[in-house]
Length: 67
Picture 1 (spheres, rainbow, N blue to C red):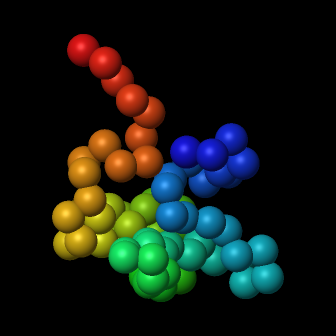
Picture 2 (cartoon, rainbow, N blue to C red):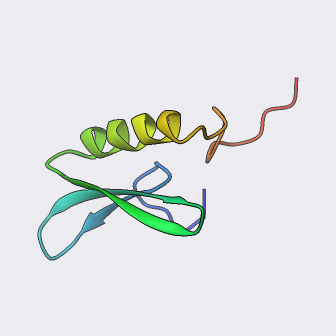
Picture 3 (cartoon, one colour):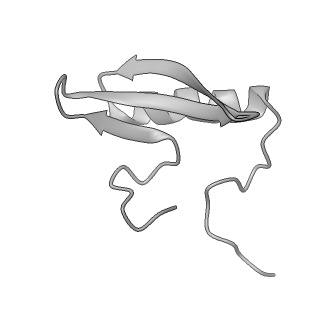
């Protein structure tokens, strides 16, 4: 995640004009809008479903953890 990320989730941001949370994902260079949600968790859930649908690695957007 970028240091500028305020939601804590990759691909989720607050739309300041509407006050709703937006989820989106980029697949093959194309941004796909996943919707607007009343809660941050709802937007994050949509993002996680899209990551699974498009075959993203389970660790996508999360800190690297060496074991």
